[in-house]
Image (tube, rainbow, N blue to C red; front, side, top):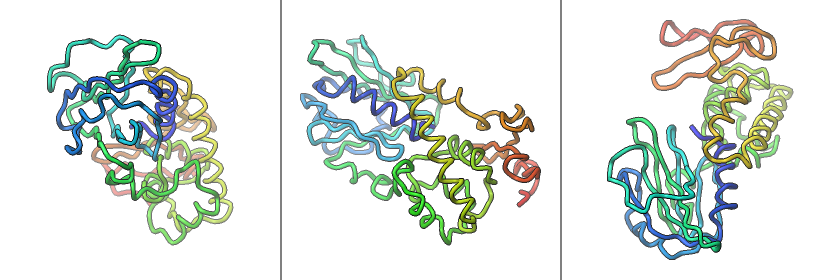
Length: 288
């Protein structure tokens, strides 16, 4: 799933390539992507692209006061096309969900595509007067790169959730998902199952510092990359996430995994759990 660093990089990319352009034809290739019907997507045609914003993991394109808001979900992506096909795509064929054609001041006619791999179609697009009209966006917690150490401590205080769960709860913090929460907890040397509301002062500070370090490093590596290369850049920077069975880059211990029905997370026992192996829920009861 694209998280804060990738969505920020996509926002920067669109600011550099799309702002100042005029929206042309909108091709809808998957009706399921549209979460609003009024106004219709054709209302974007002829509007200037005035700006691009990021709200947590939401990408929002300001088309002269009418906002195209996108949530890429788990398998969605944005692809830039310098020379898009002039023929409208066939409905329901392939990964393409939505194409936005543009007219630029340089007389070029590029487009950006919203695509989604796999069979579970969760990519979502809204057309609204204000981004806060989008369900889920209005209830976001503070951005993970804008929150202070004291604000983070206050938001975790009294929580009975596991630390992994709290970090990925968008109402607690906006922008962190499965991958970067693994990385943050590894750098902070904290167990994914530590109670979020019971961290000591040093642990909370370590968590905050790790969050800043991991996210800022990922943003710096991602911004400026071509949109097509961002997924590879994300994978290349991972220490433990999606590295089950490989050696931890810090201590050399084997990276372990805990799997759920649809997802899994990774951690290092030596760095994070005092050497304890957390039982995989596919096989046995979770070791607390």
